[in-house]
Amino acid sequence: MNALSKDLKNVVRDYENNLRDIVNKDSHRLKFHLMPTVGWLNDPNGLCEFNGEYHVFYQYSPFNENGGIKFWGHYTSKDFINWENKGTDLFSDEPFDCHGAYSGSTLVDDGKMNIFYTGNVKNIGDYDYINDGKEQNTILIISEDGKNFDNKKLIITNKDYPSNLTCHVRDPKVFKDDDKFYMVQGARDKDDVGQVILFESDDLINWKYINTIKSEEKFGYMWECPDLISIDDKNILLISPQGVEEDGIKYNNIYQSGYYFIEGDYKSTDYKLSDFEEIDRGFDFYAPQTFKDSSGRTILIGWMGLPDIEGLYSNPTVEYKWQHALTIPRQLKVKDNRLLQSPIEELKNLRKNKKEFKNIDTLEDECYDVFETEIDFKNKINFKMVVKEGATLEYSKDTNLFSLYFDETGYGRTKRSCYLEDIKNIRVFLDTSSIEIFINDGEEVFTSRFYPENQKGIKISGENLDVKIYELDGFNIL
Ligand code: FRU
Image 1 (tube, rainbow, N blue to C red):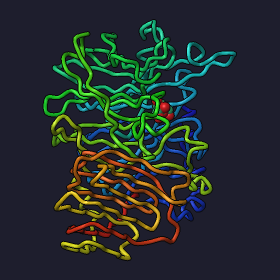
Image 2 (image 1 turned 30 degrees about the vertical axis):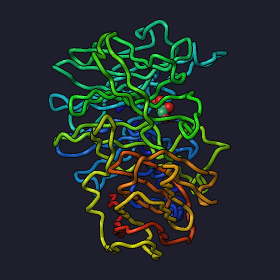
Image 3 (image 1 turned 135 degrees about the vertical axis):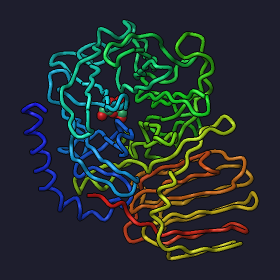
Image 4 (image 1 turned 60 degrees about the vertical axis):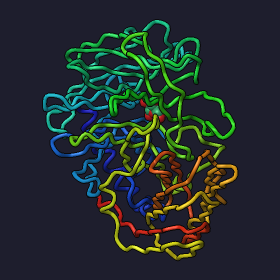
């Protein structure tokens, strides 16, 4: 850690301590989600399991609840319930990352954490910051213990990226395949076509560009936060594209997050991407990242928020000097050419009191403040559920449309929808100011913030439903 980082670590800690009381007065602080201590949070970064502990880093701007210079905040946990807040562990303190330690990933190899991230630099001058004026450096930090993050090594610079690209190349995600290392980065080319570039390495230090992965037709001008994963021998490319036009009930957010299945060999030109599928239909989901844990699960965490939403919708938490959170961790599976997301098993350990209702058509219950509800459907029916008097979930068996909509508790969030051929089960996680809905074993997911004040309870109407409601504990964060 250089001298500047040492000072910054103390400055951030003092700043957090000064504002902690204001932040903690906010009744919208979440109970079972990771949040910034103060200020702004965005993408999850560097997710991994290392020496029996899960590490969750995140883009952190402590000094500005509307986003500012980006550092990496850090949480660890052994069980996804009890967490340690490690504070801020990565600062933008070198000439090659002086305008932000942007997003990146961690590869655990040979008993070490290898952290790769983008060092953002904005040169001072009259630049458009698309074609010039911006450096997006790829930086490596090797940590032996997951606690000390010394010695940044600059490994790739703009001149190493293909010459048809703009300056927008970032968010390295590194993985190992057949004893070789690979890195995907998100990019925008000079024709404003979003794409992913692929590098190969034998030693994690020297990298060679080997391929570009893009859709046959342009799909947005920039692809952020790529992740290339393999589940049950299927290769899947996750991306967060920008510049995709709204199409009916599809692509309704300012930016999207979704995935392609890759057929063929992505290391050569002999590959084909499937149709793009949105991974989440809610108002607040972006820049997800995955990692494989030691039991082989692929676990995804997303940013429960979006950039550039000013004028569209808002978060009243900014009055209390903080904004945004991470989603609950979800396990990914593949079924019938779809990616399914289900909350990781460990979250069942948050369950406390339980209420159970069998074969009901309607239900009105005071419920709990923070809870999970599971509903099983026996036939395809019309269904409506209102949560905390502010969020409505509705399904029509005639149109097949499932919608989530809000009243003023949505702070500008209106309605999001998807089509479902049938409705078999729903699991909903309600924190003080968030809702995450998993439909049909996670075939569709809606993630959103909303801000009920004193509104409570749950109202359901349907037919022959089995409903379970669990009161949930919060995370224990030290
Ligand atoms: C996605 C993103 C990344 C970038 C980071 C900066 O939300 O724009 O592309 O690395 O955020 O905070």
